[in-house]
Image (tube, rainbow, N blue to C red; front, side, top):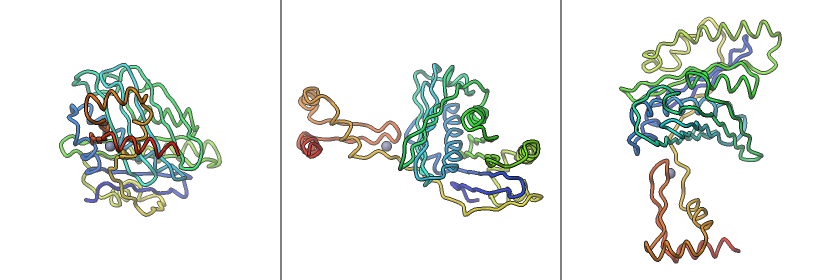
Length: 285
Ligand SMILES: [Zn+2]
């Protein structure tokens, strides 16, 4: 079956939209450089699927970062995605853990969603992680920040390293309030019937037919999802050029070069003195 695909669709008669994502290779590439325990890997998988769903709601070029921050063994987890559905993600462990639930992994904390349009001011929304699951926290986020009824379902399959997610959202200004609520409840009820073995084994077109064949569904062209780390030599040089020159000198004298490792993909960038001096010189002009 086809994976690493985002499907978007409209329920014309119900004033609602839907999304369905299914990832395999993208997820495996994100976790491959790291040795995460299975509970951490599953939660990161859920966060990746959720971020795909969120980036698909962008109406402009830009990117979304979804961060979980707390006092648990995973103090920080973050996934970035852009309108091209290029994803990357990271979990930082402060201690070893075999926990599996959101609360046991992240502890008391927040979910921070940052939206960065390519042209325009960034926007940030924060909600406390008070719900039991990540999907419920996201629904709460939409309720608080956007006041749009939204429901998200997230799935992970540890054995095959596949993740999936689906979203139902009412369109803004959808008309009569009672009718809207009834339509939303109806779509949620249909979506609730997805079984996790089905979402990982049935092609999305077929799955959408099974779920919504009684409704009028308008499908858009599917979009490919891929893994891409946004680190680069230039970004590292920029960061290094912020270091105090005397401190930079000390590092070069001690180590012969300055190196930086990307947290996400673990690529190490190494710079010798002439290259650094050239960059710092060039950026002055
Ligand atoms: Zn990287």
